Amino acid sequence: MNILVVSQTPPWPEVTGARIRLANMLRGLQRLGEIDLFVLADPDQSVLETQSPDPRIRTQIVDGPASNLSLSRRLRWMLRGRLPLPFTGRDYGAARSQFAAWARPRYDLIWLSRAGSYLALRHLIQGPVIVDLDDLEDQKIAARLSVRATNSGADTGGPASAVRQWASAIQAAKNARLWRRLQEEITAAVDVVVVCSEADRRRLDAANVSVIPNGYTRQERPVGRADVGDPPTIAFPGFFRYPPNQDGAHYLVRSIAPLMRTRIPDIQIRIVGSPGPAVLRLHRPPNVVVTGFVPEIESELARADIIAVPIRFGGGTRIKILEAFAHRIPVVSTTAGAEGIEATPGRHLLIGDEPEAFAGACVRLLTDPALRRALVDAAHRFFLERYRWDDIHPRIASLAANTAARHAQPVHA
Image (cartoon, rainbow, N blue to C red; front, side, top):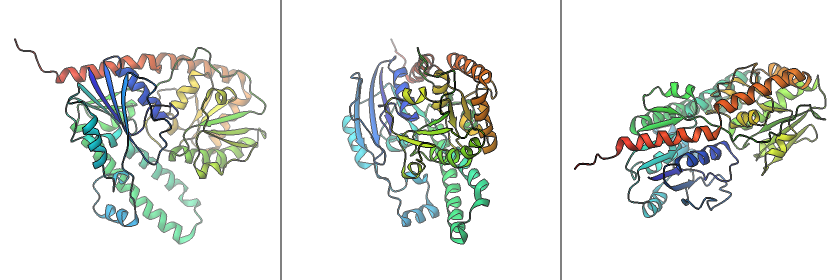
């Protein structure tokens, strides 16, 4: 089979959840044949590398269109915009021309990663199409609006701040409606839509929606430690230019950590990953360390006594939780952070949605060795049974092969 994969990020290096998922989709698809990978690189994100480490994948990386969100464009979008805000003002003409010159005449299967790939090339591709909507953007926006509403009573910015928040909420509500419409349009137009979880499958509520969960690689030597270190260390790994992670970092440092320190004063918080300026300002060693980009995550995991997932809004599933399960490190998460992973609170991880509950769960895991052992043992078994990439790859290949077969032309004698 000849397979086309289109994405907005290359899958290497595998340093974010989106890249890890894309890399493993490719590994599953490689079981079926040759792959062409066309990357419409977002100019606002670092590509980091430009050559595929796998010579079997024919790869073309081009600059995607830059976003042009001037105030006048935003106002026009509010009045008559028909696509979600991130696609406003983007001109895909040059990228489409480059694709047309590079692509093969036909493909047996086309796999599109996220909605932007579909919007960019939908009129240039023919054949069976699968779109991976690993995040449902309307759900992320709705959850963020809920968090804002919860925090609105604490705002002391005065009338100007209130007006800005009101305008932002109006914009976000429209954006959520347009994302929902686009996701429904994609689902109706293509052969299969892939999502990360049963929860997202139910939200799309269509017969052609399939679940391919996120996973993690089985570890021959997990780095998690049985005894709590000195100082006790709570790590929050992630990509901190991603708004849900940015919010989570501030929530952990400003709302949760002070409550933990009333019981365990020397706790260290480590924010592990590439930070934006707002997250970098949280760096206050030794109490709070913002590490920046870490090329090998294992060194940070090895010093972590707890993996914290203080996510209050988002979509898809958090690979960082599966990573912790695989390495035998206990996890404390919010309900939103653990969504999509069918783990049982109290058995595989602890859940705390309010600062007091989250802080209390962390303190329990730092002071109760029996609870730590029970939790990591159960979580590790759960990971091995449900979320290993080497078990998920055949599911990817099977879905792709069945989709392509439905389009194959019958052979007549």
